Amino acid sequence: MIEKVRAFIDKHRLLAEGTTVIVGVSGGPDSLALLHVLLSLRGERKLRLVAAHVDHMFRGRESEEDMEFVKHFCAQHRIVCEAAQIDVRAFQRRMGMGAQEAARRCRYDFFAKMMEKHRAQYLALGHHGDDQVETILMRLVRGSTSKGYAGIPVKRPFQGGDLIRPLLAVSRAEIEDYCAKEGLAPRRDPSNEKDDYTRNRFRHHIIPLLRQENPRLHERFQQYSEMMAEDERFLEELASEALNKVMENELGDVVLRIGPFLALPRPLQRRALQELLLRLYGGVPPALTSVHIHHILMLCESGQPSGTLDLPQGLQAVRSYDRCLFTFGQKPCGKGYRFELPVPARLPLPNGRAIVSEFREHYPGKQAGKDVFIIDPASIALPLYVRTRRHGDRMVLKGTGGTKKLKEIFIEAKVPRMERDCWPVVEDADGRVLWVPGLKKSAFEAKNQGKGPYILLHYQAMNS
Ligand SMILES: Nc1ncnc2c1ncn2[C@@H]1O[C@H](COP(=O)(O)OP(=O)(O)OP(=O)(O)O)[C@@H](O)[C@H]1O
Image 1 (tube, rainbow, N blue to C red):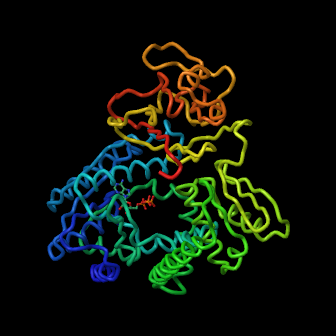
Image 2: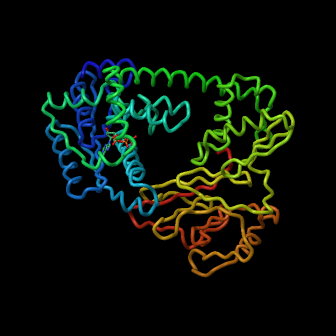
Image 3: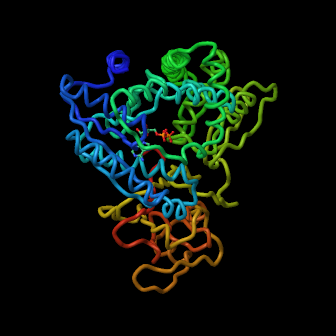
């Protein structure tokens, strides 16, 4: 197995000599084998290895024993070990998200911190060939984007370095054999089996059938994944160049010239629209799906010379003859708006600015000014909303504890009346006004109480 992994690492140039690698080690067979393989490459590649383990505290004593196991293994093999116990359940309750999603968020946060702390170039994870087969098949069945159909990438940028997956070259069975031969006695997580029912159905019922057709199934899928990823990179580049030729910027809005756009080949049309939305939103909003791309295409192809399409977060596509305008500003602010503000997210606003929300595990100390706001999620009600002002709006002021009318705040800050109707107001789910971005903070801004998580909000110009 080592030879296969070594060849895969060389083929994809996964590890430069003399670098530091953070290895995510759960203690299970995959990541333990990964650590062991990298250990045998440590000398010849002059690598510095740091094992990183997260105890999600899901299984009490048992998961604590996993952590002890990883620490002990590392001590035996003289590997630096970074382990953390994170109360994922508490985090999950505060954030109102699923257990697996919360665990992943905490884990990747910890990996990112370790990358910084050790100035590491790589984060290595133990996803293997069978994970690849399962992921691609599941996405094909459920539906995804062309990028999604390419499966798990061998390498992708992460925290100023690269996230790499050297074990994609080998199957689960090869890893189990390796563990047995090397006398590794990995930990087994019984909850793994029931965590993901869909994946388990593919694993137990579908993959064995396919493997009967080709015992080296995982190599086939890996090859397919790499080819798809290569094609995708190439097409994305072409689409981005093509987009520049068929769009124009107009006062912060984007105009698509329909004639030249429809003259592009279909695969470039779809990707050019994806790229256009990515640029407008500054990231992919969770609510955006391939259905939206399909609807924009229909709007452009329609025999009707005019039409309007509502897209997530207040973006509108407005067709008029040979032009399609994409704008956040079309809706009259006089009617007002109210958007949910997810975390993390970048929410473009009708006034041409945006609010960026993110989690921070520690108090974001050096953030000052009226364009940032820090929230302790435990002391308010999620989700957050961004809306326009309402008659009689009041805010509990920082310092005095007294309340003040928003109207007075706008008047004191000399905000023109027109702009007041568009100005964002951030409130929590109970309707408490937390912050008027750029103008005034309420008493709900969090103080430093040690460990987070905290939510950090930034009020930014649209293109910053
Ligand atoms: N508790 C943990 N501590 C450290 N590393 C972990 C932990 N859990 C998982 N990993 C790392 O992540 C790899 C993939 O694990 P797993 O398949 O459970 O994650 P996933 O949820 O399917 O994928 P993703 O890593 O994309 O979230 C493991 O092989 C290991 O390298």
